[in-house]
Length: 249
Image (cartoon, rainbow, N blue to C red; front, side, top):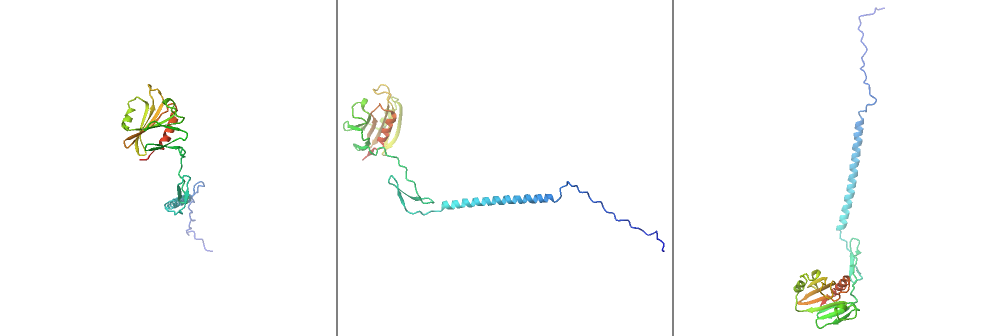
């Protein structure tokens, strides 16, 4: 046997580096990447949803504007309204336009009166009386001369006064609660005055109303000749009678 060579060098075993100990509670390094990717996807979905909603809204607005600006040719038909007027078709659906609202004429069946160049109406059951050439009286009841028993109105033609003089007459404070209104009747200038009869008259503390109309220098004056009815009734009949005034010249 060969002798063992004790001088031979024996290589030491390889050194294995220690493995790092992984903490089981430590978040894996890949988790933040997954979370960030998920948030990006959600953001993109939200943006896509908003774009869809905005596009749909814009399209709807565009179609509405296009419809409103688009002219629609309707058939030339007419519908007769209760007042005798006619209306045609209009609008995107070509429907008949509504008929005008008609207020019933309360004076339609009243009787027509003539006074100089003036035509007017009074209720059919009223009485009338000509007091000379330039004055006519009309009453609700049978005529009884005298201010105390004359439930009606007086229409006069005056040639010796003006609207300014008439207006100034009521500006001196003699009458109470006086209201002066400048207006026009059939395109003629007029002054309407109302108030309360002052003490010192036979009929005091009663409501009065009158209107003076200047027709080419002639004054036509409508006034209340009944101081025993309510203000509401005076205003009602006064305005209705005045609305029928028509000057023929």
